[in-house]
Length: 96
Image (cartoon, rainbow, N blue to C red; front, side, top):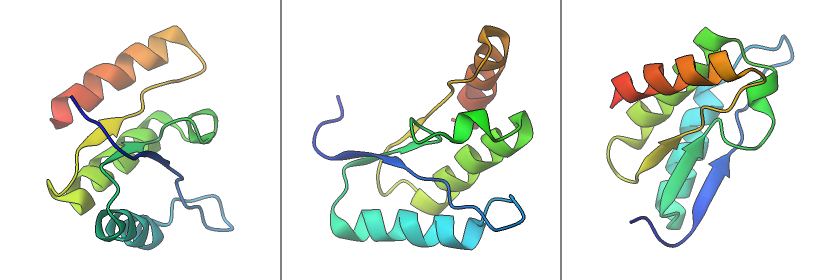
């Protein structure tokens, strides 16, 4: 069981609407260094309505990569449609 401070991490975006992966890495590192116990990637901070499927999975994949096992990462797989949420859940499960 995960306990403690579990943060729904915001997905940083550039002005053109693309995901800012450099800032995402800095956020993950900051949370790890600050004692956050777990990170929720693409959680309840609004991104699931604005990211397409591939972007959604890429943010989860990169969050896992950046966390590098230092803290648990919970994949947020919510979506505006049940079928997309199911596809996201299956794809996230494949990431490990």
